[in-house]
Image (cartoon, rainbow, N blue to C red):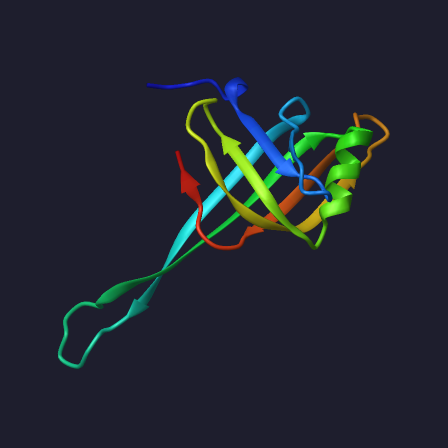
Length: 127
């Protein structure tokens, strides 16, 4: 069944380790789980062969700038904390992630916006 993006929920730890729901300012989440493969092709094979490897995940958020959320995100840059992402309000992806970039952005003809990028450390849980 299809769902509307308006039901998305996103929470991230602040610098004190308190999970903060910032869904009211976030307007985009790009969640990118991946899995490595290792090639195991041998002589005389007609096609390449692979074995599954390690999983990885990065994600980024886009948001309308808010002074409180700025404090949360600026405070965790370069640090690891918990996250909780729910694209539909019922299924939750959770884990630990390092904030690798934080970018507030201003333009004379637009509202102040921002983005942040994260590298997951370890497994992502889905519940």
